[in-house]
Image (cartoon, rainbow over all chains, first blue to last red; front, side, top):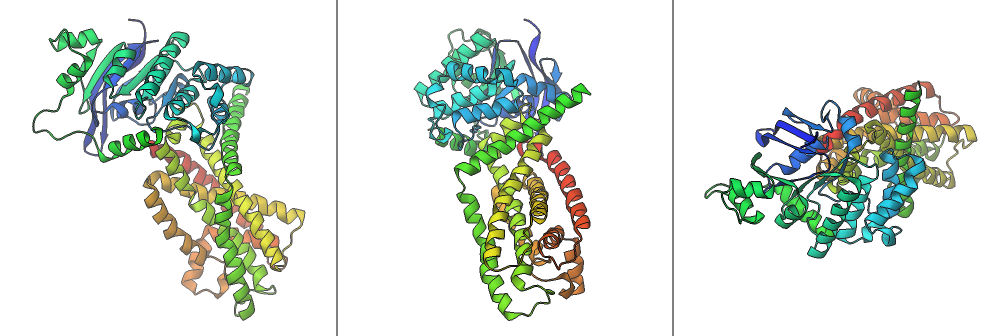
Length: 269
Length: 261
């Protein structure tokens, strides 16, 4: 294992009395794909928000490319591309306008701006839709445009919060294909959260299953099978094994999370 | 020195790009501005015309339409900017704010760009109000110097109130609460100012409020520039609004990241 691209150590995040992230630790190297899996309210999005410098931890440390996400947040932002779960393209602008403005905001040098945008349009099959207003895009196109915006400045880590939520199976598979191509061509590290087991199986080198703010299991798919003493288990089985609700315990997830997920699904669908 | 200039150049590109995004959106859908211009125009056309006939207010040597026009201009600038925070909460709900705050974009540039955008919105409205006031017979000094001064004051005033709104938006975080705060603030700001009547005719307690009300300085600045017989306190007005805008910009830059926490 090489130098860690992301290193999280004993991270804690509280919202009032609610403990959203409870002392989690994980790391992964440059160019690899790390998946955070878990039910609603597990703490996946909170973890991602801390790594994207959007939220401050109460305790513990997190670094990206060796830079601390709290003390060296500006340096971290140069290294990451972030695609939130909610729609982050401007529907009033065309795809091309979205890319052009984001290229300027992410310090892409003027001399290479046009070629970077052309590369992204080509890589993500956005060329034909480039001059259309983004509000007319399908869910899959929107997600691809968001990914395109996030990689314009050639980040080393792309952070994706539920990248295929609300997409139909065809659009979802297309996004996976593009992410795989991106990783291959740009040696990009990926950190993603997902509910879809198939997505994690297809994309992730390493998986951490979160439940109620803690990591209950992590490793490769094979590692997780070994930990569960179930050599033929699917990721679905492992997820239920590690994160399944215990009898009598309240169902996790909040109104806010449910509303956000449904709103995103409605917009993309 | 070179590093400072490099950083300044980037900051200006970031600020300009945020303004560019807002201008592109406004040019594609100008209806928002048209609809927002209706209310101030009603004040000018209905309220102004009616009170001009009554002649009960001691507005000095000028007719009431001329006295009122700078007040309505300030009202328009204030009202359009005080609800600016709703746009930012909408952007937060969309995911745009998260995208911006996780990018290398300088946060102060994001805020200054947003405040400048509020200034541009207010400029368009200001132009419409001045045009209609002129058509209604208000005797305004519309020379190049006063117009230039008004433009600067519109942008500074809009930035001040938009900065205030942005700060409140970061604290209240929902559109419903922001609407409530906006409605709570706008009418007291308007009526406890010199927009509709001179401060001198108010009861003493209201005079104190009006003197501390930033909108009064905006109205006074506009009157000093547009109404020839009005005593000008432009230096004081510009100082209060300039320092206020600087303070609001710093406060908004500090509070803005709270939108996503």
